[in-house]
Image (cartoon, rainbow, N blue to C red; front, side, top):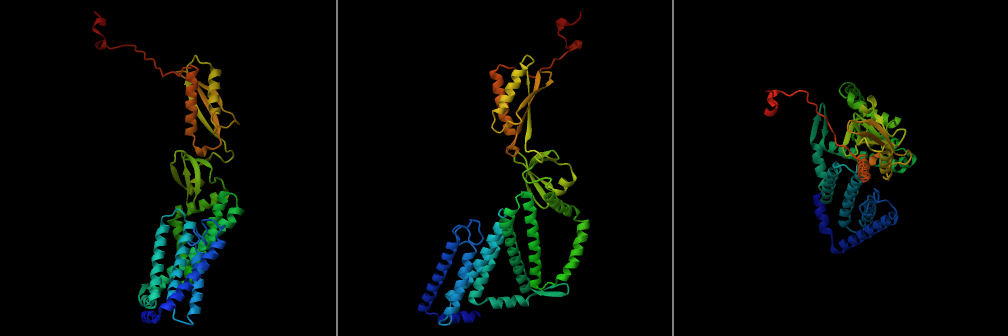
Length: 426
């Protein structure tokens, strides 16, 4: 249908037929909403099919589209149709927008690029709907088909490129949806280890995206045999210019498969100590107790020395030192130190805190208090500070001296010009 057919159909529409179409459209929307409401009562809020408020999921516009199109075909046998035809295009655009938006938000919840993609898809969908409603879509597509671009000896129309991009995007989004469903429904229950679940989900997502990309290229008309040349060139590039990048990706899968370090472990890499929060395919995120986060390439975790502080034992040792006067009672000081540590709820009772006299310092007796915690990810300095405050208060209450640093200065000779006049030799 072109634009003239659209204007002619508007002239044939009467008020009675418009009300009939509006009533049929309202009935279709009510039935679609009722079905979604019935089946979406116990669904999670992040469901792609139902969404948060039932109508913002994918199922509602799909059901409304199906019912409206069936009604349009039925009514078209008795009278001209305009409202239902507009509703079909609106529901089709809404279904496409919901598909892209819900899937991308579920797969990439923290990505800022998702909103830009959503806006782009929305603009394309609504512009296409408007052009189809007024009958301008066929001439616009024909005009785009006449505009060609040269790629070497091959000329490709803008319409082919546009349709290829949309087909590839649709196939990749469906592949991401299937991968997210497999990860949520199957891997989350079948694989209990977080690291193995991560590598399995990455592998499934990469495989499905590769298959989807191949299907999209085949649908556009790209000869897949030409990809063998691209694969060889890519292999040469990886062998020379992308060695580090390829090594990081391979090291990421090796780390996840070997499980030498896992998400949640406390590690020390190049004097940086913290907890592993995530293992990406190229790098690993390590968050320190003070909130600072380090991005460590996976190759460094494979080739360099890494201290895994929680590989064999979740207990973490913390030490604090203090110096008291030489006239202090050693047993009393040890009891005060151990009691101050035991009073903290995070400090473990097995093994119990222990205090040692480790050194005869120039200023006094140096004690070292050792205690263990089972949750170092909650911070070490905070519990050490609380214990130090308790030690200080207990030592002051027991009147145990904490000596100031003292130094003795011995002067063997002083130049005569610096001596007082009364002490100068006669």
